[in-house]
Image (cartoon, rainbow, N blue to C red; front, side, top):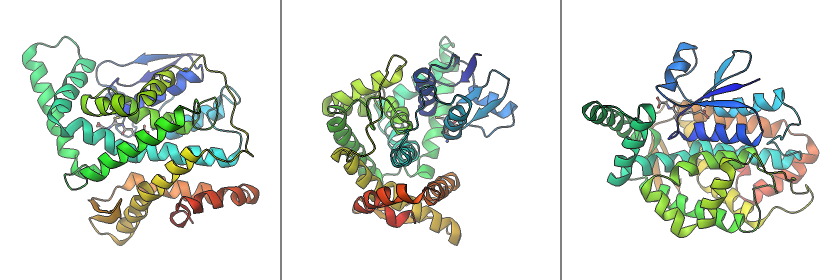
Length: 332
Ligand SMILES: N[C@@H](CCC(=O)N[C@@H](CS)C(=O)NCC(=O)O)C(=O)O
């Protein structure tokens, strides 16, 4: 009954998946040496990590569908999907925001400032092989650095977008700081998929030097919340009652999603439809420019479809929340 999680300590999606497995008390081995990406390639999967190897031998990757499969295969066992469909949909939206928008913060801080680049190179190479001869290590560090720095523009981590990314990081820290001082997790006293989506990216941001010092100074309770989420196997809690109004901090977070990630998703989908090679959109009062991203068009489609599939009574509660956060116009 043991799973094997092929991942990598410096990989946000790997630690996200590891935290989900631990909270759900699913027995697993953390296999984090060498080149986990090769496991994906050998299994004919998209070349991304982590890869989860199931007890029956199946190997799959992509953390969002993996979390959904684990829900189906272990129903009722410390689920991370809230019972209330409104909370469940918001949790999925926040997870997606974490995976696809907060990741820009992770990538930007990791590869922009010299101190972070230097540390990331050490962390990545040491995770692959801690005791490489110095010359091989330097070569591996340089080649990983060049590969990732070369990808920055592709994911929108450019000089022009930098103020927007950093402002969004500070907003996220401030909002979460207020939230976690009042509530253990986003939707009650147990963690949801949304918590784990934010956790994955923020855990890396809590280690890489520049964003880590910003987090320690600005949002020390967020730092402690991440430590609790890392291994929440002992947490036993309940979902917030469906009828209680959403905390103001969640409304603020949703408004931020409506000001950043959703306009980006809409512009990205438009650019792909029109076949243009650049996404151009106004985000937080500045021009955002990057190349279109196909995977994120799939995320957008999934969000809209899952919203459309919700039963009427859930929509009657959810739509005013999304309307107030100025999210609804991007989703219908
Ligand atoms: N949507 C995927 C994203 C996984 C992903 O992008 N993983 C990164 C590492 S954190 C990766 O493998 N990138 C490809 C590479 O570095 O070659 C998930 O949620 O698991």
